[in-house]
Image (cartoon, rainbow, N blue to C red; front, side):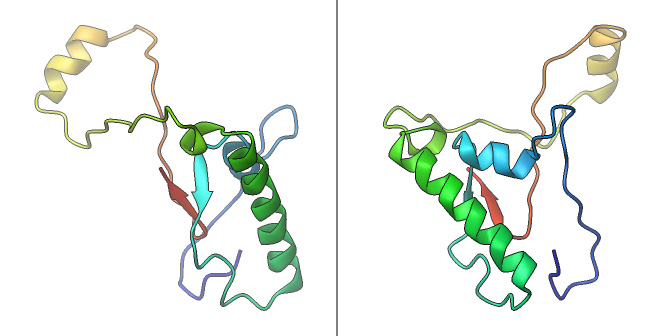
Length: 109
C-alpha cells in the first residue's frame, strides 16, 4: 500500500491462502490505527481498509484477542543480555517464538 515514504511493504500470504494482516485482525491480535486510510485516495487501498475495518468490528463484537475482557498484555524484550549463552543453550533445538511486526495501518497490541 502506498505510504508516501520510501519503504517496501508486502503482504504475507499463508499456505492456505489467508493473508496474515487480515487473519491477525480477525482474531483480535491487531487493531487498526485510528487514522488508517485517512490520507489514502486509491480505491483499492480504501477497499482493503474497509475490509479490515469489518474484520476488526467482528473481532470486537466476538470479544476476541485485545477486545476480550481478560486480555493480558504481552511482555516483550528487544535485548538479549547474553546472546552467546543463549545460542549455546538452545543450539539445534526448536524454539517457540513470536514475530511482532508493524504495518502502516496496523498497531500491534
